[in-house]
Image 1 (tube, rainbow, N blue to C red):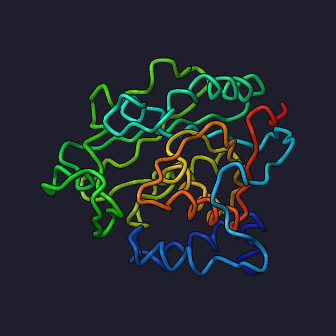
Image 2 (image 1 turned 180 degrees about the vertical axis):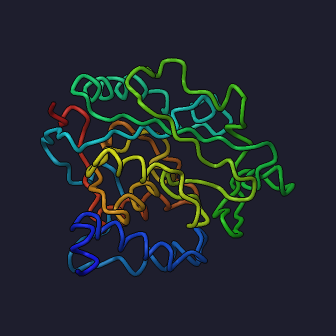
Image 3 (image 1 turned 180 degrees about the horizontal axis):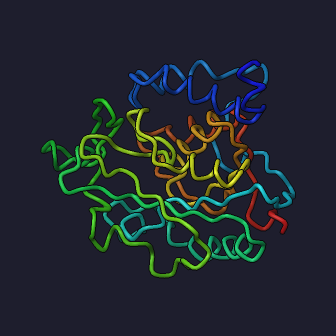
Length: 274
């Protein structure tokens, strides 16, 4: 019996995706990894470059299914406007995220929250290199820029925003706790080897489609979307429930272009029909 017949069509997709990830285990989210990838994926004959959020094509109505899950990414104090790595208007998405999470919860759909959880002196911190936040820096598992100290384990900045309604979530996934490897994706850390456990957890629950929201659009949400597609999930981003950093300049535009090319869908939260 062939491998695809043994594990089924969806299982085969995930088997193939895992094999592809394993084959690139020496690759990292550094310039060598993402810059050629972004350039090579562009196809002007099929898709004009997207530079603004308002230029995205939005799916008008999406009906929730039993195989859907909502992933709420890093709604933590340090990512709020007054936090150590504040995302502009990041606090404005907390209440509408609660509304969508409650919609999932009332229909017994899966809701998972993720949490950046860095040890003191993490190698992604500018202070660990005597450099300034947002200075360019690349090493294995770190980059393309350095960050201010943020989401340090046990600190108030690492805590979830106090207005985030936790009752809808059935699990919390922590990431970024390896001292020398950053973690943008909620699925795989930046060494492209270390899985957070989220993909296996969703597989056990027979999840096929994920809705990603939270912070930040061009980092943790973006890399989660790309890894999600590579792992065989359909991916939808309610674009009104996320905000971007756009550092280095142009990063957001590249992220949007790549997500569209990879089949990520975009919608608004009130278009998600329960």
